[in-house]
View: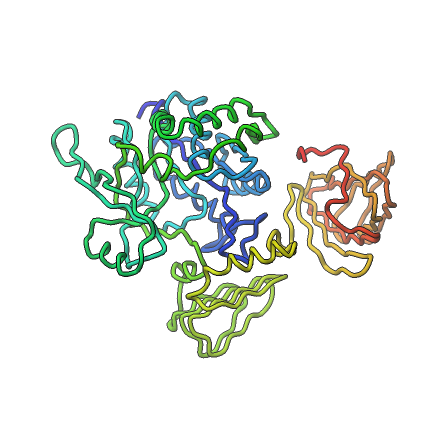
Length: 480
């Protein structure tokens, strides 16, 4: 394959994953979690492509708030992104792929884009790579290819793709198992889904695509010229921020929001589909996670410290303490440090209503976990009361927080492990284990870890306003 037709994975990682609350939160969504193994779903997505020839570095499109976690997770599996494009606002998949295509064509003349969601499970990576390889010739010839999941049940929760005639290779021989797309079908009722399954002509819509960057942009220009114009303006106005690419916020916000399916695939005459049987799931609910999990003899799937008696076909997740269940059937139980979900398995789609309610009530549980990741490390709330807040803070070796001050609170830091470098006004001091330092209200200060081991401190905040909003930054290596 020539360099201009190098396969560039475009990994879409902008989702919030609210249907897997309380484990998935808006600032820590499911694609950044290890839901079905030791690695996170983002990491699994980039690693499952290693069997492909002529594979380029991944190009990731993600939410601005997730950028440091995305970069760190790629580093952990020794993957360097071609670019990490930050969406200032969500505009669905069609604009996200458009800016990715523009970025990719700036590096390679006309690459083949393999568009993947960062939060899907695919058990058989070899089958996916084989399907991609089978589709290369059709994509090079100008097709817009999608992967249709061979259905295993009459599923009413997925959209469907109806196949048309089988493609024929240029030599006159049958091409690999590739079909013209006759139509895309919305989520059907159960009776209709049963008919689809019986016919053999329908596949689940995976939301994965494969096409030339130039062909996608040309089809988008025909179908949605205003969208492409806004994407071009946003990309042309981009700015580098550390290792990230920031789109022009105003231009991207003006872009219409739409999916690839609606904006392009349903309108083009170039759509083809390859059947894919690879153990795929979009893990769109706790019930779906139960389906892909390893069940015991009673159909129970458990993760963490779980003990159950006489339970059947249920899912248990323990994040921070023992979870015990007795006599439960078709039940979901999920425990985290600050929230517990108990739900009937056939009603887990309603979790998003809980998240919406928490958001309306301005409760932080919809947004983040008790432990909050930051580019320099993490912090976790330990206790709180009237006028005080206690946190545990960990700072990674060589990292430092911003130079900052607070107008409404004072802080008292006690070093538990490691060595802290503390800047207080213009004085820099070293604070070791079992030593402490006091930060008065309004004083400029900075915490850093100059050592080669993790720094742990206990922070006690006191004051009238104990909020992350009460931070004025004067210098920050992370560009916040």
